[in-house]
Length: 239
Image 1 (spheres, rainbow, N blue to C red):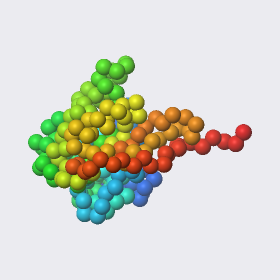
Image 2 (cartoon, one colour):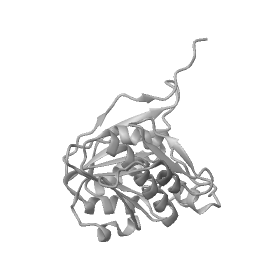
Image 3 (tube, one colour):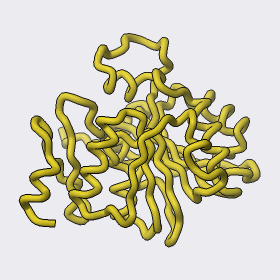
């Protein structure tokens, strides 16, 4: 793709962010919701084998499928995003990076994902969902930001139900979330036959409580969970 063609993919007010992986860049709108370290950690935590198919639910600007396409030998990556403007931005990032043959962005509702895609089709599902219940705390007046942080457009049950329907038997489910909801997450994953298999906590500092938790579930697996060594984001400077 020529430089002029790449410039045409950017709209007014948007910027390009270097993903520090394989020369990839992501189109983002600073006035909207931009990706954070949680998406990067989720892409590192997710295991995708050669030739596998991956679905990212609520893909936003497409950060996770784009990173996974760069980091793994998966065959096909699909991102599902309900907000048309955000899905369009994700498609333009896919085109900007020349990944159209491996990454597809679909506009649609997570609650209807099993009707949009073929049931029991995907090997892997990833999701960086809204962390807060709809009634929890103050909600941002901006629709995109509110949907990214609060369960306005879908709930944890919606995500787990549709993932159960879309994953093949023994397919893998990967999610990043907040530790304060871990009990609820584990109970509901078990209910939807997505047996928790791996957990990893992310701490800002070694002596601080975790702020994020990464979870792997396997559809139809037997109970047995492994807690992996924690990730510590920052190290304190010597006093």
